[in-house]
Amino acid sequence: MAFDTSLKYAILGIARSGIAAAYKIKELGGDVFLSDSVPVDRVANSAELVQDFECEFGGHSKRLFDCACWIVSPGIPLDIEILNKARAKGIELISEIEFGYRIKAPDSRIIAVTGSNGKSTTASLIHHLLQSLGKNSILAGNIGAAFCSFPIHLPGIEYIVLEISSFQLDLIQSFAPQVAILLNLSPDHLNRYPSYEAYCLSKMRIFENQSAADYAIYFRDSEQTLKLLPDLAAQQLCFSMDNPLADAYLKGKEIIIGQERLNTDKLIIKGPHNYQNLIAALLAIKAIGGNLKKAVDACYTFKGLSHRLEYVDTIRGVKFYNDSKATNCDSVKSALNSFEVPIRIIMGGSDKGEDFGQLTPLLKQKAQKVYITGATLSRMQEAWEGKLDLALEPDFDAAVKLAFAEALPGESIVLSPACASFDRFQNFEERGEYFKDLVRELKA
Image 1 (tube, rainbow, N blue to C red):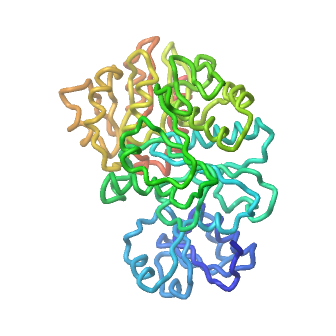
Image 2: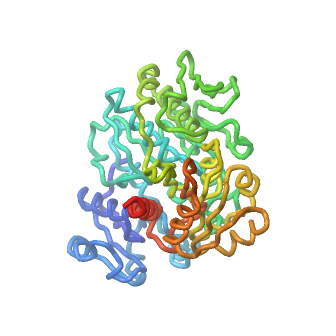
Image 3: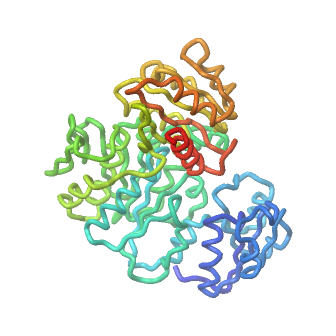
């Protein structure tokens, strides 16, 4: 779709993706206005932004309504008053993902990944596999740099691998990836959506604009996915943890996809959740007609991502793992199932509205002791008191140090919070890095 220079754009929410879209609009010769409810002193690089754009901080003025199209930050709830007013006036509301799709060069093919868990690992895996096959690929979206920060309007990028959140999908209109992957569904962001089903239906939107020339990849073991999966125009590929009727599946310690076999014992990444991610990534390569044998070989060199069950260090025989990205219960289940012996687990953070009680059976089986910290301490205590061995420690540093003081050689301490990080940290990355710093201090 050609860029319309006559259209005035607004960026609502001056964050990473919005700033990238603003600079892309300026690069293409367009007119853009930036607006954020946050005070100017809390916006990074505000002095530079004021020099480059028309901006307002600390609230939204009527000037926004002079703009015909608003690119809305994924962090902004869609039911706030100013967005309702914009809809009433017929203003177009889109995400940065939708804008990027409209301006990208036609020779680029998009592989988009969504799901409640595993998006970052799967998207990174696909990018790794594409590069191993000699393809010109970029990795963007909800991971790393924003979609619009790359020269996507210019020809030459063969593949664009996007990690996509439900918030980004909420405001798409024409976005249609050549390969769309829905990894899994589990309760998440229930503080943002009216129901679990509404959240799931948001994820399903990744398929809605695809054509018969495209591919839709999904997890056939998920009852919720099968229940809500719409009539798909795209060609379908499905994966399973044990069903040989799937296009790719796990059999014992082998991943089977067509004539290719992959030995999970030889992988650097571990755990059933990572095997799911890997199967989905290989199906993406199959969908684009890539060399599966070379892709399978490349899987053995993938090292995984920071903050995703990341081994940190061993101190006096005690291993430390950083799983700060586990911001919901389903992620914690994946972490627990990755260990054969009971672990000491550090949990808690800012509340996302989940039922922590669902973790009780697995924690009984897999956790030697649960160290609860952060803003959700009282809710977790209510869910598990009398059922699990608990340590209640509001201070994050003290919780980590207590776990180490009580651990014996041969045991593992795992940060796997089941919560967002915003009670103390800016994001899960900052929390994970802080945890690793604490481990380094303990070793010193």
